[in-house]
Image (cartoon, rainbow, N blue to C red; front, side):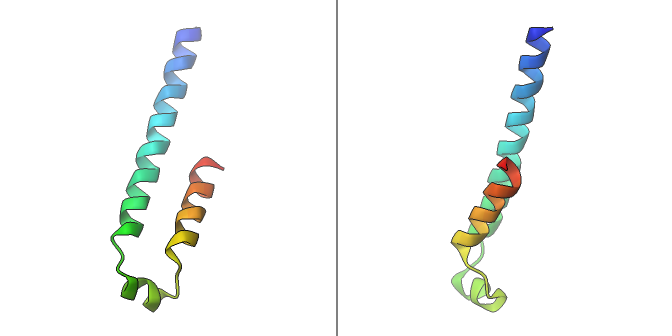
Length: 55
């Protein structure tokens, strides 16, 4: 029972980390020009991604 709980929490944590890494890589792939065209700030986008994934 405890081991199952531990394993499921570990899987959930790994899934969150993968999603976070995927989104960060996508944001990092934007050039400064792309961000300017979108009127976006890279650091704000990264902050929002972290907030969305981890709360």
